[in-house]
Length: 437
Figure (tube, helix red, strand yellow):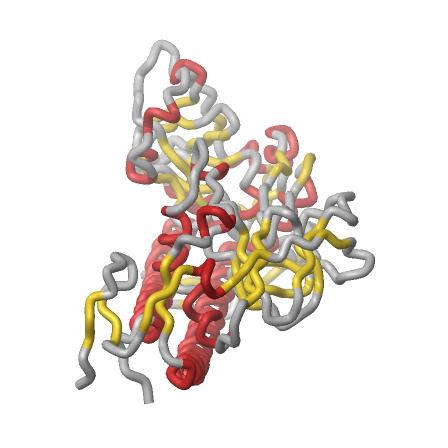
């Protein structure tokens, strides 16, 4: 076992006895050459490294106000809202002025420093040296950055570590891709199952525990998104199926604010954030939602933001709330599944008015701004089985969707574990705590 020593730097900790530590300013100098992206191809600085400019990035007219990047340069976004966006470039090109471009003063193994600079603890250290007013205006410039201390192993060890991490992280990334693909397949299975069951194309057995092979006569619904439905089912506009709840929270009857998400449905806002002081809204302007109500976000329902509430509380004025008068609220639960069908989401999208996506920076940000009006929502035709069959369908889907959700949650837990392991592996290798072969 090799001897270790204290580096004297908190984020690095112990390093092998023969390793050195160096300030970034002793290894790199800043490149500040201004160029045009007409002469030097525009590059994007992302969490995956330095790439040809992404189609999703926000374009500017400052074509001549860019920084030169040369193959082998280290580039990092100085803003904290792009934490972890950095890399050693394999390309010549240009980047926006918000980025810091560094060129090595001496011969360095780019693979080793690519891994070191992409480590989570380096990102934390880089942030610590910054300054600003609030997080999204926090900046670490070159004058700050050059004083950051990093590990400096012998050249041959730099190369060994880079080779080892290339191999091991490639194996991890392969498992991640397979896991992500499995999650998508589970989601598609869930979507397909919901759609086929709520439109009657798959029949649920009377016990609500399984699908039935018993044949049934079908008829054309005359509605494109529904297609054929069982002959005994009715079709009706949404306004005839549920009643709108327009009860205002004035005088205040509840200060329990409810939140609505695509994945979780209706939850308590207090469970979503501890920073409630930011949201001291006028609760008298909110609407009330009762237990069993179907809550729909008028701006986000096009991507599945609908759900039945398990709570009594208040919701944003941009939400719609609907109810039935049944003790078990089976129709609102049935409609929850209806409005999570992929085919129904396409209908809602076609009815939305506004702007759907805003794309900025290196990552695509889908900001839904397509509002579906109450009038259009109320006119959507819905398949209407009997109340008893609704109960059977809800029972079956509740069980099956929970099973699929559990499988998805297990896979997502695996992704989190892999991410944690990969970060730990990179850190231990680039600081010499793990000896590589």
